[in-house]
Image 1 (cartoon, chains in turn orange, purple):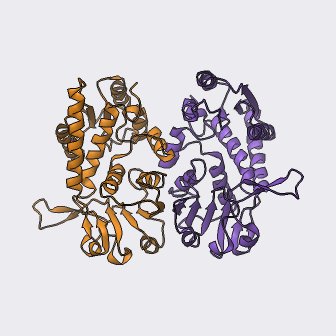
Image 2 (tube, rainbow over the protein chains, first blue to last red; image 1 turned 60 degrees about the vertical axis):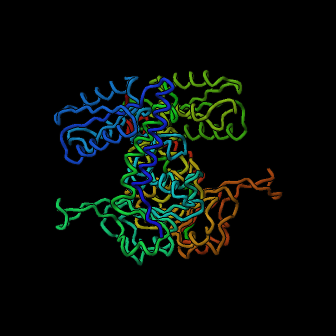
Image 3 (cartoon, chains in turn brown, orange; image 1 turned 180 degrees about the horizontal axis):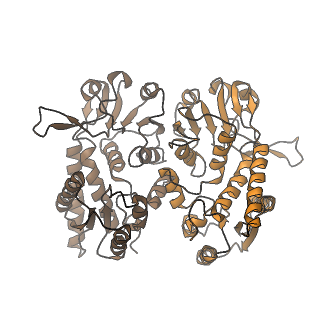
Length: 295
Length: 295
């Protein structure tokens, strides 16, 4: 049984990205430039943005943070987005979600030029991913794909069972893993809140991906011997033994499930560290014109 | 066992569309206008276009056919598309595929204004479908959804196994059927050429959708008693007993599978007649501004 070390793999990829950036600069280019747009002062968003800034530095990227007041109108926010779309000095940008309730998130996402949509949430990128065309892939599922690839896990012809059908994890993973590609070429099953017999399906999984946000939902008796288990869950649960009073809990009962797996990701330290790295990877691709040609 | 009569259901929907069009006209509106763009003289495309024109008439639509020479340049073709995008008198248009080899089909599809993309092939429509947002759904899978709905087939919590992962049938059906919607809310499994144990999976299907283009692939021993079987296959096979020398053959061994089903679609006369009706439905929605607000 191998515990997949997301931290180590993420660090490797960051180092590779930084090396590429140094080459670009040595050849007379400028560093990739990622802009984050933050509306209001949500605690989670603030700390996520701070991590992004730190990782940008590790990768040798330029990063900028644009803060807008929580009361900004949708029209003003979209104006800001249009300015970023038009700014040749910006390779990619992200609008930190969630947005305040008076703003239509989908309208904001669709205002982003998909050539700079390094979060991969614009319908053009979602659609191109489903069709199997080059696109910016959303960060978390893209991180899962990178883990599978870096760990040398064979996916072709394997039965991948995905628990959860969110637009940011379950659905894009299903779309990526069923493609005639590597990693990919899986038989894919998607289970969700309306699935009556989840255990019957998880027991068939060669690769089981849990992305429901339901702490320790996947028990020992739900996993086939030798399966690959990827845990995308990150729920904060109370934990009086920690100074901060909580810990991150995955969707898998790790201690009991792990002995039965060929590979398993821990929480934290599995998929989590890959998410920001995927975003950096997208930004590098954007800067180098590797997904879409530079306009 | 009920044989799903696609012809009858298609006729019903056409009559409903025609009734709506009469209401629109009675209220002072103009009929929906669908334009077909045909490059060259492919036999299959010619006859499909002729059917579309005939069905437009049955629905009370205005229809136009624009023919372009097989040697048209991509640039010229895209100019024609931009003119249709800009023409307020055109509600929807389709570019008949396949296109001549010197033309990049994807570039042509992406040149279509997605507000008028009634074939549902533009990445914005594909992406919005995956996300679960209003969009133009591609004709054949949308026809399957209409059949399920019109036949009152419960889909919630059912295990739907899809054979085939094409961009025009298998993948969009998977994306639609996993949505939290009705019809929808299925546990979805997608099998394809890299799936080693298809029979193990088809035997679990409450709803089995065959869309591989592999004549009579689905045999009696691959189907669970009482399953719903939807056959999207339409392969021409030689048949000396027919004057034209061929017949259409589905992906299901109908005669032997049918007795085991609760519902089954025949070929021809099942999914086939629904495809053009779905296109008409999309065109009506486009004309009425029901998917996207009129610009």
